Every structure is written in structure tokens, then in C-alpha cells.
Image 1: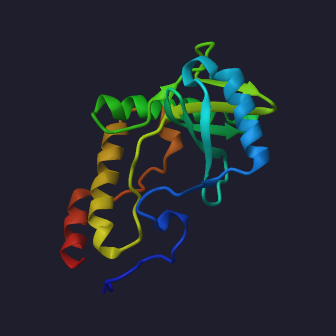
Image 2: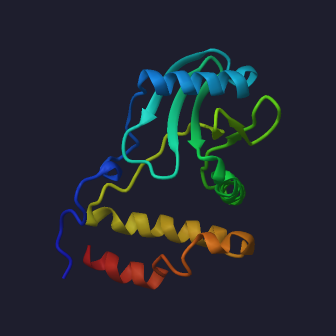
Amino acid sequence: MIQRGRLFQKDIFSQPSPRFCVADARERSRVIEAVSELYAKRFGKVRKIERTKGNELNSRNFKVTAACGVYMVKQRPLSGRASAAVERKICRALKKRLIRCPESVRTDKAEYQAAFGGFLWSAAKFIRGKSYEGSVNALPFLWHAEIKLFESLSGMSDIAGSFPERSYFTRAEIQTVSWYA
């Protein structure tokens, strides 16, 4: 039987929205150099740089507040070019189905990603969002969102290998489990 309460131990994903902390001096310097080289015309003067709080495995992510807006800047290893392309493709598919997704920002040379300082950099307009915080009561909402996501991406054979064959619940399963939550 499902017990009411928390399903998981608290971690960085337990917050209802992303958390940020001040980037250290070395990170700020590296991000300012990259942004100045790649996005100077699009961003304008950088006012603030925050790093996402938590353990990031495949990239470092920075919230950059600049004269022309707020952006998420992603720093990846140079080998991450393919995953960045898949992310853009997924966001385009979701936006066509009216699902909120960050809008990629091209560099000043009209590229979606560029190598600089030994890293691959990309940027997107920052949008606020919410995270699943780990409670049993929130599971039905999470499952509905997951179904909407996978239904939106179905038929995209070129990215099919990016997802497990079945990592979501069917509508009937959600209705059954929701009854107990």
C-alpha cells in the first residue's frame, strides 16, 4: 500500500523551483569571457552570474542576468555537441505542441553552440519553472506531465534512442494509482 508522505530523500530536485548560488570568482571570470566573446551583442552588459546549486554531471549551468534579459548559459565538454542538438530538437517539438520550453539563443555569429576556452557553450532564455518535490500527492501531476511530454515526442524517430522505450505510466495506470494517492 502507498504510504502518504515523501517517496524520496531530499536532494537538489526536492525544491519546488531551481536553486542558485553565487558563482565563484573563477567561474564568473570564465562565464564573462565566454559571454563577451560569444553573446556580447545579444546579452549586453553582464550584471550578475549565478550557478545552479547542486551536483551537475554533464554540464555546468549559469543563470546570467544581463542588460538585455536573463539567460541560462550551459558549459559542456567539447564532446557534448550532439546532446545540445537533441535538446534543441526536443524543445522545438514541445513548443509546436504549446508546451513551455526555453528558447535557444544564437551566438553573435548565429550559431546555437560554440567552442570557447576548451568548452562548448550554449544559451537559452531563462524561464521559471517548478520541479517535482517528492511527495506522493504530487505524483499524479508528475505522471500527467510525463505522458504529455512523451506523447508530444512520439514519432520523432531521430531522437528515439535518447529515451528509454517506456519510462512513463499509461493513462489507465495513472488513474488507478491516483485513486490511492
